[in-house]
Image (cartoon, rainbow over all chains, first blue to last red; front, side):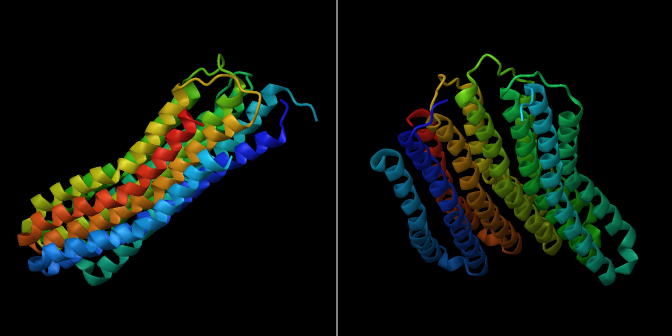
Length: 83
Length: 323
């Protein structure tokens, strides 16, 4: 098996993309879960504000999502643009 | 050092067996310890119920134990089977061990949680003990799903013949499949446990709500399994899609990376979906009027949490099919 420099660079880009997206999904997954959990709690305590709480949850989750999207962008860059 | 292939396969099988049992023991031990802690607190509150609480504790611990027993079965299979002297078997046995070892962590730790909260619940509402125990049994049984996926993958790995396929990059596809299922099971196993824990607590607080609480628990637990199912999907694609022989290392790393990406990417969403499901179950038990609203918001929130798992699935599929 002959391994050349370009081959190693390609392999590093693949493993980098995989780690970027894999590890990058950890934080948003946990964070958005907390937002959703506390929204359910708040609606349980104050059902009248369900609409407002849902809206706030969605905005919060959208912002939390951004780091996941950064990971996705970096992974796609590594796969299709950089190498 | 010039070993024969047979020696390499044996070494890998022994190491894989050690990894399967070593990692597989973590979850069940933590979960059962957690259950015993809650049972002790419950008995100190209501010493006269010690018989009932001890019975529930033992039943709950027995279910939490099953993840570790799956790991023991796979470890024993790896130690005492004879594998063909084929260089692909080196990665097959290692991957089976990794899949089962990692896959047992979440389910073991998760299914200890409902056992603990069932003991606490019985000390609060002794009259509801049979309903609480039934709910705990259903909840912790569903918690075992991720570890069962890992067991199935480990056995598929051990009993499929890979000999006709090129060693490179098939070795990486096989390792990737094990990592995808094993890592993805961690989050969903823990998450399913969080849901079941809160539902036992909810039934103890509001006995009237037991029917709707169990239903919502099953719904939330089903959604919690989605990240693991993505992991299983990626693993099956990796196992059953044959790749052309490649001399270079890049195609192999792409397949390995695909499994790693899906496995790691499913941990956070699995936990997050479970945590939000647990809170929804807890508060819908306390406030019956808000059940519809809470269920709707729970599903909406869980859909948001799933999105990062879907990004991981996307990158994993790109790595398999395009890279």
